[in-house]
Image (cartoon, rainbow, N blue to C red; front, side, top):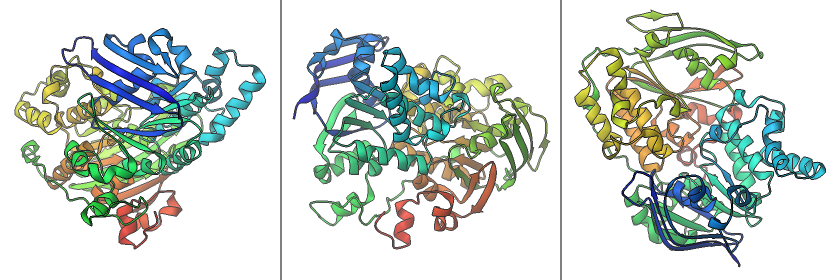
Length: 532
């Protein structure tokens, strides 16, 4: 097969940094190959794909050495628009990729700008929309789409140019179970039709569709192997903190020479992380009652009355557009003007009742990490971010705790860095740490595992688990059913703006088909179902 991507002696150092972020002596991908690119946040994955799609060196400043060739042509000699006709990229954050008012305009944007004949353009648009299952969104405004819907719109836009090479950067990080299934069904059909590079932390879900596994660490490729040989790399993957499918762990334990992706699964032992130093003596009851409604001019209505007990973790799940994020924003009084929505939600704790939509007042009892967490990062350094809330409130008693928070979220080496220059996973950890550092004892997290690697998802689960035992009330929105099953005490299913189910993870996953959820493999094992 023809080598369609070639890198030789590639080095890149970001402007203002003294250390190389990427060093690849030699690397290539053949036509039709499907390659999984994985590694911890900040390991060099994003820098690697930006070298392939031409963002480096044409847009991002820094010191670039070596050669990157696409179908034999050096990317230095090509402009980004030319490269984009061959290399299509779905970004990790769709809000940075979607720029038009309606879905139809967004999907039509690229072929229109490349002067594709109208008849051909219509065929491309229809095919792309059908491929990702968003026909029902054609006439919707992009500003009103959920994160998962927006991600599928961005993918459709990329597909209209029919790129021979397709890069998917965390393609399912913001998508519900139904949307995730559609994306992977799309991948199943695309295997061998295109050359695929999939940057993904959900190794288990991607393995059926790839030929090779490439693992990055500190800007270097440490593993580049056929997926059939992954059993030989388990020890290295574990050391790097990469999520290893549990059937592979079991196969390794049993001394097997090959593994069955759809086979028996085994639980991963949890490591305990001490967070008790974060807990101050402010009483033990941090329970919350939230009730009210949010009404949109567009006609979508949200109505609920829910209680959240102190010392519990509650997961809010449901399809994209079911009202999960709207409920969170209403609870904290953070409704966007563009949504033309009227919010009337009351928060009650053992100490106070808040009815007015005052973000500052609500923020003293409820800490909120939004799905678009970059909105929270307003300071020039990570250290300033972690101290910001206490500085605004005039409190200085959190200094020692903030240092501990930085250590727990592995942020010590980034304290003087600009948070917006970090990787998405690192930025999320900064936002999460800043939320806890603000002092509230009711913590609301909107898709906290999105874009996180296995190592940091595992740490996050352990951290919120200890906060739970210390009496915190944790409420999170997630499409990551494995994370929910492991760490949540309770699941609330949203649909059409209402809470349609409320129970333990076992109770909800027992009826997962009714709610459109994909149960995690640990649950199916417990029920004796092996072919997941």
